Length: 245
Image (cartoon, rainbow, N blue to C red; front, side, top):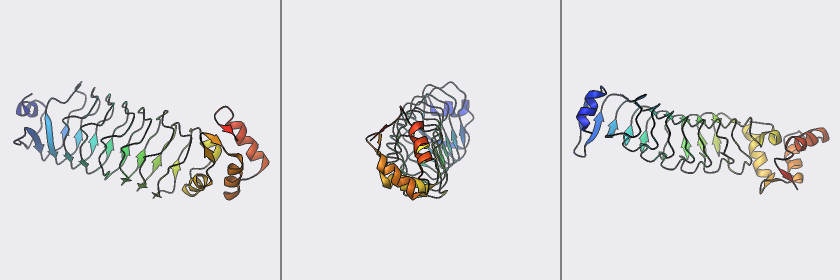
């Protein structure tokens, strides 16, 4: 589609079209609720925010390389982040899509990242540092936080996922909480405190998807929760989910 015609039809102002046919604008762009299955033009730099939420996109081809505001691509049918901007200055909204991994994610996340209600099985491709919150709520097929960010300058929310192991958790978490309610692993750790989760990881309680009983006792002793009643209750809660060795 002709870029100028597209800008005129969708009320994109203060734009220029570069030699490669990409649209650059000093304003924000809103293309939500248009039923788009693909973006028929290419953007270069958007100085404001870019909103293409609630469409039918399966990838992000044609999106700007640089967004100096927030990026909203939520509520599409994304199975891939191919075409995702290389730089987004503020928040990124990817929720309510069909993503299974984070390949093509920007190398830096300068604001919060919202990924709830996807189909993530892996965090591979994610930025190493998130300068804000990292929200994974309701990704039922995500069993591990491996490949996830190592520095989070905000909240880490993984409620209602499928987390079964803590072999990989951030090295630095500003909020001191990694929220894991409604995950298979939560009845074992019964804590969202970062220090407790680090102790659980270091004790190597889970091995090959099995609970190592003497390592579990060590963890409970470290956090001051070891007792026969507590141990029996944990083992009862995870029966049929984990094998105990």
